[in-house]
Length: 187
Image (tube, rainbow, N blue to C red; front, top):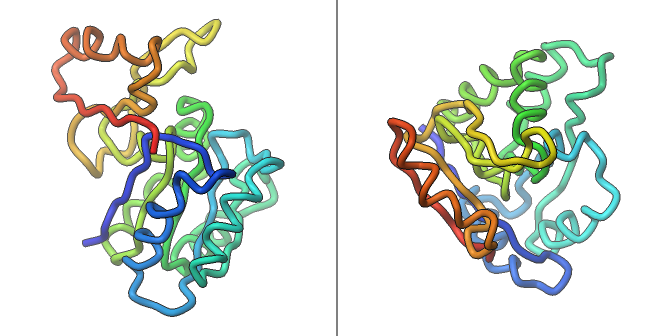
């Protein structure tokens, strides 16, 4: 089985997350691991994510991308990219869009297979929630918070950014469903 490393959120540009990235890279046990950045939750928009790539490169990793909104990709293309990575790092954004896209493209099952193969799964915010049975995200109508069904590799429901006042309502919302919950602050 694989390893899952989650980040509740945080700042990349000032190095706050660097120790976490360094740890994730060390989990691969390779001098130059292949990192596959999956920005689906951000609608595959990566402008501004350069600092994430830089942190991975500072740790000796090679970084590539997988844009699952690209309708030209076949399931075989997606599988080849995911299964050739040592580390999967999923970006933040809209969890519901991420899960809808992954389910539509077949990536959901491929990520489960990657975990079984021993590929390290990781990510921040939505990229941390997606590995659980459920996530608590502000991707509802008018940015309202909703529970979103996720991959289910990890049990329970995850909430990132827990230091944020609006995210803090998770402690009440989790009591309304039949799932255990875990929350993480940024950094």
